[in-house]
Amino acid sequence: MARFTVTCPHCHAQLEIDDATQVVASSRPVEKPKSSASLEDRLEALTRERESARDKMAEAFRAEQAGSELREEKFKKLLQEAKNSPVEKPVRDIDLD
Picture 1 (cartoon, rainbow, N blue to C red):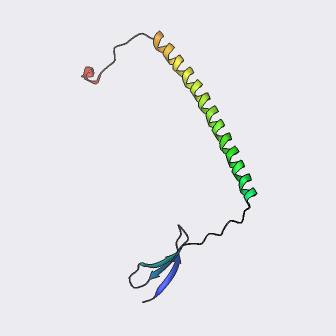
Picture 2: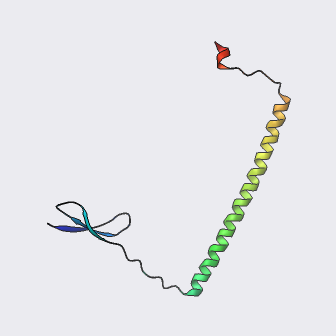
Picture 3: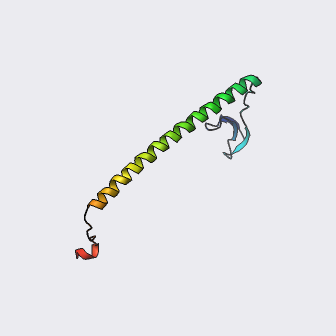
């Protein structure tokens, strides 16, 4: 009964496979290195992340406002066209027989 070790392509864990039964006998997850960043470095990173999130939110808000104005303008144009066009009786499928 031989066992061999492979690396999972998804999570990079070490899997020990039993040759005879072809099942995972054991696994060892990858140990992530501990962060050696100081508190000041992490606070600066959080500040940058907060500013980035604020900028993204402001950009999304501006895009939504511009889109809202554009949709309002299109609606008014189509409404005006609908008011100016004559009212026609719709053609139904049953009327085509």
